[in-house]
Image (cartoon, rainbow, N blue to C red; front, side):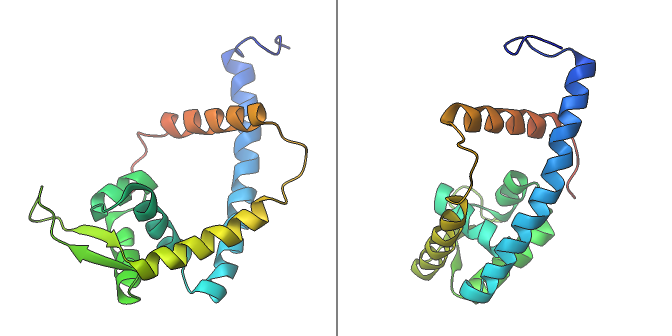
Length: 157
């Protein structure tokens, strides 16, 4: 067993990371279901919610850009963008940097929807217990980012 402040050796790290992955799967599936329950309220599917949130955070983007960030296929992202646009939550605008790849922009109606979705999610997230500290959450985010970076080579298409 290592001192708590020392980096883990490869074997022990591998075992501990397996513990993390064993928790991520059920957590992801339950969170996904919770977001799906919100679809009945706001009408935004999980995919549309993700697209709207990306546009809220980063401004207008192309479908390929969104696909790379979300690690999803361009085709799936295009379908969710089409759904969002069909509901008036996003719109296609010209891309001055590249004529063949339009930008997708959040509309005012889309901003209203994603604001409501995020407010509902925030209310659920406020119920997380355990007396977690900022340092613990920061460490968790650091670990998850490192795991994601390690999987950057995995193809999403």
